[in-house]
Image (cartoon, rainbow, N blue to C red):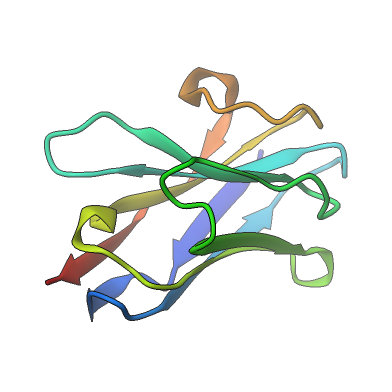
Length: 124
């Protein structure tokens, strides 16, 4: 059973940076894709970024390109999301997700495992 545990959320001001981390346990194959999604107040959960577990082929939503960077650290079983130049519209609960395939997708339904989420609040 795969377990994902996020951390690193918090309350910051516009323009600040945050780094989210997701520790994965129970992954039995390196042929996995990892992703970050977010769900803002009153909104549907949306794709943010994804990467193959081995660390290649990062892919980003247009709204975060150039500001957010996804990466993996296989030695620490961690996938991270470095968030720079944060905006109030980035306020959301951020979720880590994984799927047992190297194919990166942006649909929530394609991911089998989810973390509990971590809150990010950006004040103006």
